[in-house]
Length: 523
Ligand SMILES: *[C@@H]1O[C@H](CO)[C@@H](O)[C@H](O)[C@H]1NC(C)=O
Ligand SMILES: *[C@@H]1O[C@H](CO)[C@@H](O)[C@H](O)[C@H]1NC(C)=O
Ligand SMILES: *[C@@H]1O[C@H](CO)[C@@H](O)[C@H](O)[C@H]1NC(C)=O
Image 1: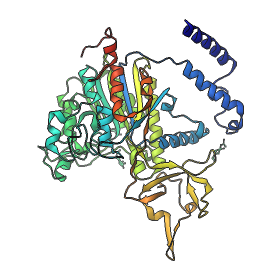
Image 2: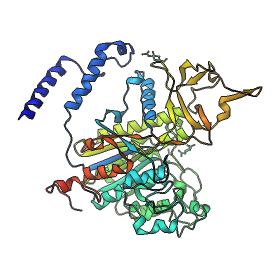
Image 3: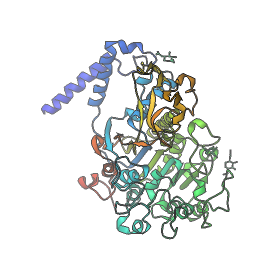
Image 4: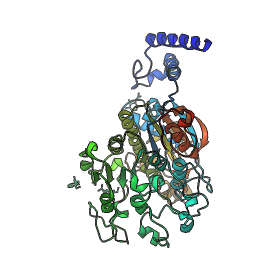
């Protein structure tokens, strides 16, 4: 009774408050000006708005019919911060005050990304953690830690094979699908459907090249076409035609296939599907796809990874466009679906220390989340956004507010009095570009002589490496929809599918339906 009185009183207070003040920058505050940052009232009302939103958001305890898991590959917390500033600055608002779509979610947690045998993880072992709920060895996918790198025999033993949340969804009579900007056989999406002792076994050619026998070690592309989970995926979109076509064939863009076994896996995919199975190779065909008459959709838009969004390749669909098509096809299943969406090239751009491309890919990823929110209902769809691992990117020094996030820092180094960039990396390629040697003295190059306006500009770093490495910091988890309040706290990355499975009554662990015997669930 007292609790009820408290909430009633609070609700009245808040209603009064909210009519008295206009909350939110979109109402009374000017996002285009930094002058308000000096205004005491601004900070007070900004904080009250957040408090009000928190108090007026009850936990959503409905059953999740659909689960969409968005993975920003390599999307470390500094990447999100820089991405939000970059997006805001491009749109002419104060970048520091901008929000990416998933930053609007109410519940955020931190995921510990290390793998069984590495402090800093790769995209393979992490995919086992966030999709199957079990941590594994570096470079392996969908298998337990009893499988060492390249151990093909162990990877085929049933007890060593993990079951992903896509498999749980299929077992729960839902549909499942995946969308990525990388090859669909790349490490992260492979975690949805494959079991392999080496992430590089993408085609039978790759298996052979790495000294193994394809008979012993089924390649990842093949597992997508005839594996138990792979063959039942309703939607598969990304790049990588060369992994699916024989080396005697060329794809829609004139690139030669790679397969040694003579199989055309794209053709096989289409032939073996019940119902209307549509294959598309370009953006026009994707946008002309009628979801209502499409039972299965395979979209392959490049021989390898999709072009970077900033490179604006002719007729490559964007991540938001692919996400929309995937949701429209999957939403036809009255039982619901699990969808995996990867912004896979944030990571690639970071490896090249091409910060501008990494941030642009992050913005595209955010736009894909926005699209998913527009197309789904928060009362029946759980959306979770996270990253597999971090990167060594950092925003450093003391740049002024509204300093270009991809430009030079407003401050100079107080040692060599030379400029440095707002963004830099702990390690990376092209070391020689940033240093000169005069009379045996190594000095930094004056960065004012380099062009940072170019989308391919590479950013300075400390340790020279062939490519920039991943970072070992925790990554954030953002959740929205049914049971999103479970995603708070600091936990192992392998907890994620358990939380998603609980919310949607899927998987081998305890679920919401175990607690609610009346809920309709028929495993
Ligand atoms: C932020 O910087 C940009 C580019 O230098 C400038 O055009 C804009 O007016 C600045 N905005 C504010 C609010 O100071
Ligand atoms: C897209 O692919 C179809 C075949 O699937 C082809 O007929 C069409 O010309 C392609 N469009 C472009 C713009 O390349
Ligand atoms: C495939 O990606 C490469 C590299 O990003 C790009 O140069 C090429 O234009 C892309 N091809 C198509 C068909 O989009």
